[in-house]
Amino acid sequence: MSPIVEVKNVSKSYRRGDRRVAVLQDIDLEVQEGEFLALMGPSGSGKSTLLNLIAGLDQVDSGTITVGGVDITSLSESELAAWRAAHVGFIFQFYNLIPVLTAFENVELPLLLTGLSRGERREHAELALRVVNLEARMDHRPPQLSGGEQQRVAIARAIVTDPTILVADEPTGDLDRISAEEVLNLLERLNRESAKTIIMVTHDPRAAKKAVVTRHLDKGFLNDVHPQTPV
Amino acid sequence: MFILKLLFKNAFRHKLRTFLTLLSIAIAIMAFGLLRTVVSAWYSGVETSSASRLITRNAVSLVFPLPLAYKDRIRQVEGVTLVSFGNWFGGIYIDRKNFFPNLAVEPHTYLDLYPEFILSPEERQAFLRDRKGAMAGKKLAERFKWKIGDLITLQGTIFPGNWEFVLRGIYRGRDENVDENQFFFHWDYLNETLKKTAPRRADRVGFYMIGVDHPNNSPLVVQAIDRTFKNSLAETLTETEKAFTLSFISMSEAIIVAIQVVSFVVIGIIIAVVANTMSMAARERAWEYAVLKTLGFGGWHIGRLILGESLLITLMGCVLGMAITFPAAYIFKKTVPMYLPIFQVEETTLYLDLIASLGVGILSALIPTWRAIRVRIADGLRRIG
Image (cartoon, helix red, strand yellow):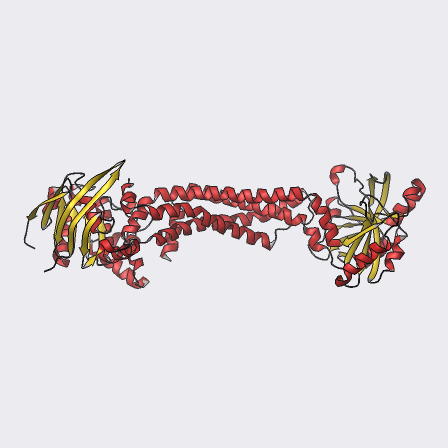
């Protein structure tokens, strides 16, 4: 079976003042379709950078990244934006919902880039909110929701376009234990029941336990493979 | 629909800031509208001037008179249908601050030549019959609460003494551009008095007003009149009524240019105000733009959101500004009726308001849009919190 995400010899550095700081060095990584991968590592290890590169939010210095058969490192800025809209669902640590929009409108937002009619958009957004069990709060704006609820809305927004991969950057980093557990269970359920490919960055071992595979990043290098349960 | 809703919600996120910005735009648009209206009012005399009327004056200066005897010779020029004449009287009513234009004219020909001054047949007859009779514009009569039959005394400046008139007619304009703030009386009254008090100044007129049979013939008639009086003691300068009015306006051109410059400075100020608001909004929402980019929205989408919000704010401010321009113009008109008698907010001014607002909306959004498009997603997301 060919991997859905294939990272080959990827290096990435940032300019800090006069010098370049290497963040990722010759990274190779494969993620199988339907896999739930946790990327762990200390702060500054480059895990969020790797996640951004896989999600097409940033450009590699060298190497290639193929997602669903598409070499995203060869895409232009606008092609990458269109690709992200169709293939990536992103879940942020701080939810990043648009505060003036309701939960429903936040979920509907990515659908504006599709050719769906208003009625179809409504149907899809309601379904996504039902999946995260928030249909009853669809008319609430983010400030009226708890942290856990906001993150569930963010998950609904991420899955509403039925993307190829879901990427989550510290999705429980800003939540209390109970809310974090709810969010992780939801991600686990999406992976198990809907076979969603999920790549999650975390430094919480409890969160990583929900993943199928855990990889560790340290000082820009990817280390061992820890399969927790068979894929 | 979704985008429009988002634009509205974004525009009113900071209600106080948006309200103050709207207020600034509205006041600036009102100021711009008023200044443009002042410029238009200044030129209103040009617009109302007839293409088939000429003015003949002394070639040296308007200050120097022309002999009354020129009247018959002008009348004989081919193409001339009517000749009237008059003098600027420059009288003061009670106090200098009560300024209004007052002229001595030959009333029969003058009323025929200027059909835009409408008098009832009775008042016309009464005015023509009474040598000491006068007619005043409706607005002027309202200003001083004059009624038909009132005795009006003007203190002469060019022609010294106290001059008494009986108000025999109150004219109204044929259309709204006609100045209803003027005062006319019989030239004969002036001339006969001068014959007694200053005989050297009698039988001299300030200017001739000439009707021509067709506007196309005006250039030929102009040449013919001036040729008639070439090498005489009082050579003439004949021009169309429009050119005559424009020559007056050109004397105050520096003021007009200054007003026009100030009106554009006002627009510059609004650009700065709106650009500041949009820059603040875009800076605060940098992370949201990064989120939208993450979701797959391109630079053009982000640009449309910023541009749309900027246009929405400026257009709302513009509509508000246009709405308050009318009462402001009314108050302005009531405050200084004698200097700018025709003071109306024109349709063109409203279009200029709209164009200026669109320009402000677009220019104000340029830098924030450019910044938002250029910001890297990772950098934008880093600004969260």
